[in-house]
Length: 423
Image (cartoon, rainbow, N blue to C red):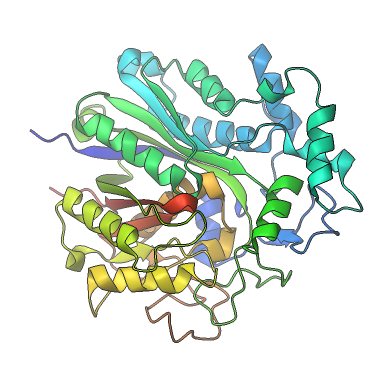
């Protein structure tokens, strides 16, 4: 018998606010969280706006384990802790994990970004507030002994696992923009295949720092318009994405487990597909083969047809190449009548390693609220982008099955099918 997998806990730290209530309110209002960068002096950079999490101070987070003190210097880790704790609290309902589950069969699959040193240390080595090769070299040379190991990628994950008492397998995914979706997909497969009974999953990241902003500026990937409408997915005047930061977390378990303990079921994970373009590091495959294959694999895995899908949460970065490529891939899979498709990156920016996780939560918003999140800032139609992008205003709709896309750097593609629980 196939094990069905459901979501019983969610948590978020986002540019629209920390906590699911604030995040859902922002989506319901079609609000933007963009603002001038505050975490460092960005005046020397071509891109000077971002989506920063507005309400998380380092001293506001209890860090009971000695090695966790390093997380006070690591925004992404703090976001991961907050989101993970919220998801666990909701799922467990105030009980300890060991009262509800065998801890040895509860694991964690989480995604994050990868840094070899604390990027904010670059602030002391910027040349006129600009990032150059010498800045990076000086920051690395001046780092104290063992600084490269001070904030390993799995530190926040280990803190969460220890706090909750999880004793099952733990995996940390660092596959760039597809990482959050892949982490959720791998957790889903582990439960469906009977390897785990439950899992904490999702992603956390922050590249709103001199290295992240400077690096993406050098790639020419970031919008340089520096105003409130800088993120314009699918718009003819788009000029790149805008960085965001945050975390999204989900607690997954079997449908049977959730029903037996009377848990509130938020959504069902129906299917997952992942592929690799093997094309270029920063460009999508010109034939969209990987993206098409990932969507089709997710649909097949879920046992649903394209006509069953009511909504697509697009990768939708706002770059010149991604948006028409994703549009073409969606048309290849869904034919001449694709479902409404929107990009929540227009409201929260590109969260890189956390993007897929937070966008999965936005997809759950559509399923729970029966409202399609909007693609805000969409004013000028692009003749290459010809879908219904839910422009500017959230829209009530009947949503039973939804697809969430993540197409990342290096050709990583990952897709989730989520749905309301059906008999």
